[in-house]
Image 1 (cartoon, rainbow, N blue to C red):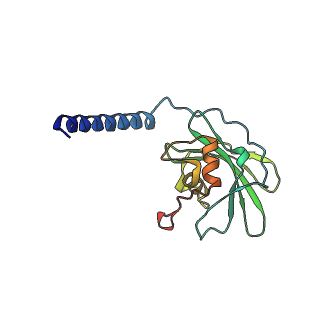
Image 2 (cartoon, one colour):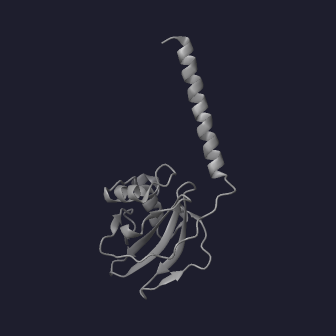
Image 3 (cartoon, rainbow, N blue to C red):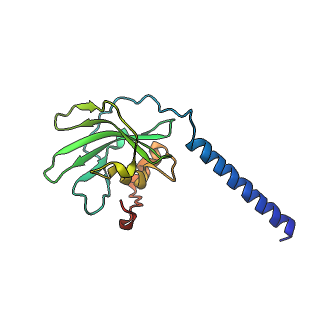
Length: 173
């Protein structure tokens, strides 16, 4: 290969790198970004939950209700997650993950009453901060987010159902 072609290739690679960096900067720091109006908590069934792999120290079973998964135009993947403890008691949360910033927000919770209780002032929190359960982190890594982008609901469901599992014990989940 001649030197002019190598030079053009290097210039092209640099231009692509600058364009990607510019896009990321504009998207991450977009002061005009707003979250869509959040739809009300959807009905769900515990019959077909997609199991989420949790680290060994977590004693609850976690599953995503597939009929509730939705990716909005705002880049947020919304879903209902059901958590069941060893005695069989279940709780559910209606949440959204903003893949670009790796944040989660809980919009509503459902306990034993079977009624949704809206969170009065939902706030974005990093997926690693949702203690005591790290389920949002696991959901994001196992299919809800793909390299900081929100895939379509179909792609999210496919990844979760296929068991696409990017959890590794040494990643500090």
